[in-house]
Length: 128
Image (cartoon, rainbow, N blue to C red):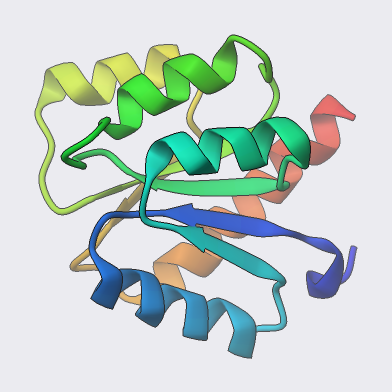
């Protein structure tokens, strides 16, 4: 599967981070959509789901866990990677129960994101 066939969506309220990861993903050849508002992202996922979703766990309007709960109501198979700067064990457990592929720490190198994308793609292929 070519990178250009793997649509990625990123949801984060921090515009600087969104711009950084969007640039990095595009340089790697991935088609990418970014959203700073979870509600708008949920509608976009409902209409045309990506293969991989990166979502921040802490956002002011709706956190990543609540967003994922809403997505799981209509899409059980979406490969999701949680973005976090810090998280509690309880939040990690909630995310695990919702079937996330992995976690990307904002302090990590984007090389870690690349590894998570590959893991998410493998998960996506198994579900097809």
